[in-house]
Image (cartoon, rainbow, N blue to C red; front, side, top):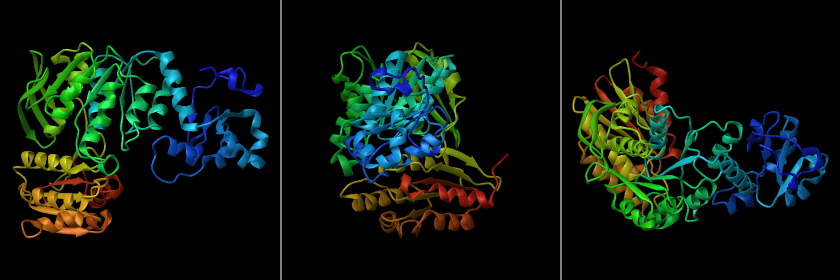
Amino acid sequence: MNADASNLKPALLGSEVNSFATDSRQVKAGDVFFAFAQTDFENNCFNGEFQDSHQFIASAFEKGAAACVARRDKFEEYKAVLERFQDRLIFVSDGILALQNLAHGVYLEWNKQVVAVTGSAGKTTAKELAAHVLRASGRQILSNEKNFNNGLGHPLTVLNLARDKSYDAAVLEMGMSTPHNEIARLCRITPPDVAVELNVLPVHVEHLGSIENVAKAKAELVEGMKPDGTAILNADDWRVLAMRELHAGKTITFGIENAADVSASRIEMKRFGETEFVLNLQGDEAVVRLPLSGKHNVLNALAASAVGFSFGMSARETADALQRVAAPAQRGEVLHFADGFTIINDSYNSNPAALLGMVETLIDGGKSATRKIVVAGEMLELGKTEKAIHAETGAKLAATGIDFLIGVRGLAKDLIESADGLIETKFFDNSIEAGEFLANEIRAGDLVLIKGSRGVRTEKVLEKLLERYKLEE
């Protein structure tokens, strides 16, 4: 990618760069380093206090950076250190916006199809499944690493196209957590050709105020599509289905409970981590043997199937692809231990609907289990009624048929208090203590779900088990 001469010093004219960094510790020779200040983060919907990375520009140059992008006001602040690098600095008014604008330019130069995925739950799994299905058709697919789905992770993903233009399409997860039009901003970087809407749940209501506002924020994906784009909508979620009125292009629906273009029937869980169903793509059918558990993952698979369908794939091609997938780390991955117990590691995030949905999966697939145990971490960003929501969720968990509920940190105590006396319960202040307890308590035949919001670090529970027990070979 050739740099724009209008904003470059003589030392940079003619330079060609195709790699970029936002963390000075990861700078490699030839990179362009983007430095950000607190104002940049505030202007671009990020909550919290952030370190001013302009103080690391000198370090980036020492590691071989070709140039650094910086705010002019910050150059004046750090002038004593940065003046010797002035001929290799590119000045902008907002570093994050500059990164996003650069990514948009790279996207325009590449000019191929973008599939965008959003939803309150399941985004990363659905994104991975959709990318996997399209790759199985022989296409080269760019997708976000992990959940790089915000105003920084998204443009950094797109900038990979500067190094490698051979990708045939991109499957990109788009997230939001504030009322500041985050998804609309991401759509301006890469306007979707295909927009996948998974669900609308009461997540991030602490910042957005209501589930109606969550729905409006998610709908920005459909509104931000190209005029002739295809919306892929969950027919089992009425708030999602209503989004078909927001665009004039094609709509493909998917669902289990309601009539849909892409549907699943005869769903059967063979053993935990294996689900079989009949996939129907507008009359074209094939049996899918999905190596994932639960209705929610069948819906994620249907969303991915709808993406494949929009690219012209048959039911048989899609079914063959789906039976070769694996759950992303910490998102419903099933671990069978040599000592005879099974762990479902779903530690990446949690909310009431997602937690109860995973417990439903546990119950459906755990009929032969000696005990069904749930390790539930505190659920974050639920708004002013978060205490009552935890208590209500605890009562619902106690009624599901699980045998043992372990609460981890903070408001998870309310989960425990409302379930106490109905089932066996324990509460721990942190995930390490919970893991140590479970490592002593667990026995052959147990089926355990571990789930919690990211900040609770419930993966530490699994780490304690792995310290003592071996996985099946």
